[in-house]
Image 1 (tube, helix red, strand yellow):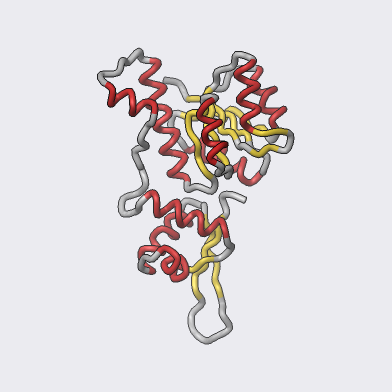
Image 2 (tube, one colour):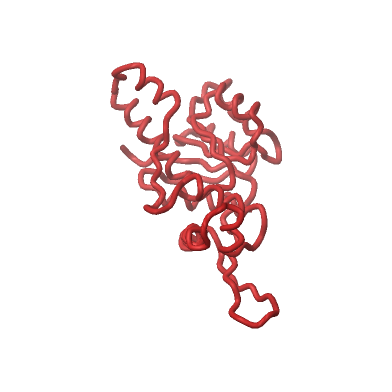
Length: 225
């Protein structure tokens, strides 16, 4: 199957570039463009040649769900993945009602988006190949797909997401501080922090407290604003 062409709709330049980079890192996907407003997104989508939209909900000229409703009214059935900080239950339910295929909360580690888009690609390949369901369990899995985690060995996806949340909500965390917040050992917290730093999603700096002794390594989130 040729690469799936993805339109990133995100008004924040830093987040937009992060999402574009994530898409281009994924085998089987290619970024078809970036749109910073609802109006621009609709213009790009009117030309076709897009298989999937990564859509923020809060855009400067409208709500992401209104973009989807407009597309559907025009007969455009392009698939949509919400990539957003909108946590209202009503927003999640409304997205599901109008056919949003995945809902990814910001901030997130690269693996989170990779897992969601990989699950989407598997479903799409199965549909395009004419595959049929065997039983009710398979129907349920299609309607509520369970993501197969591809987080590196030794790390847990839910813990990684919690570390990402901590870094995004405050600038500058040491391994000791993360360990205290998570209730884990410092060594465990450091593994997660080092993984994010190696992926380019966290920045390592030195924290000096003015006392004698070695400085501590501090980690800050850099992939999302």
